[in-house]
Amino acid sequence: MLDTTLNLVSFFILSFTIIVIILALTNLYKSWFKSIQEGTIIGGKNLKVDKFTGRNNFSLWQIKIWALLKQHGLWTPLLKPAPNPLPADIATREEKAHSTLLLAFDDHVITKVAEEDTTVGLWCKLESLYMTKSLTNKLL
Image (cartoon, rainbow, N blue to C red; front, side, top):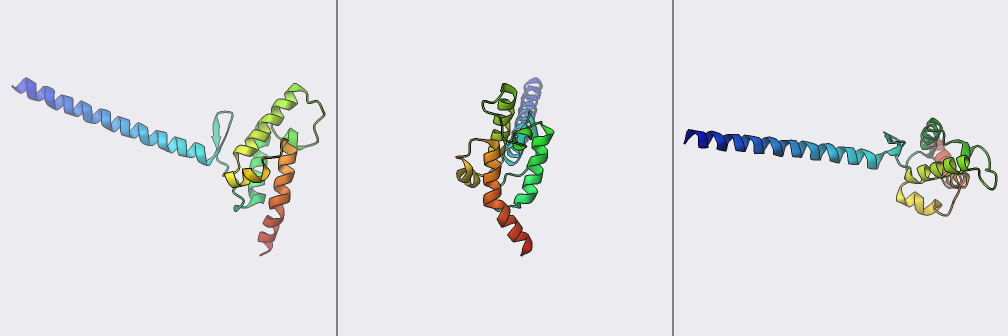
């Protein structure tokens, strides 16, 4: 009878431990997933640059995203108009820079700039839509 009781207690302790571990892993996964949603991921690293919503400070966001692109060697598509046709290495950087910018926007902003298919076009469209508003906000 004592062996049965000890086995039952051991079973409950083991079950409880497994449940605690599962809950801890679930919370860890939820926090990891939330950090991915709130930040921008490049090269497998989650770098915290808030998405541009159209309501946050465009100038500050622009500095952060420029630094992020530069850190990963993706700023060159913004420096000058690209030759036509694009060499393979430049085309790859163009695609990565363009997609990185799009992923750093809120849905509302994406709908305003989605027709731009180049990084330079996207950047210029953003500046035309939001730079003036940011400067006006600074003056107020």
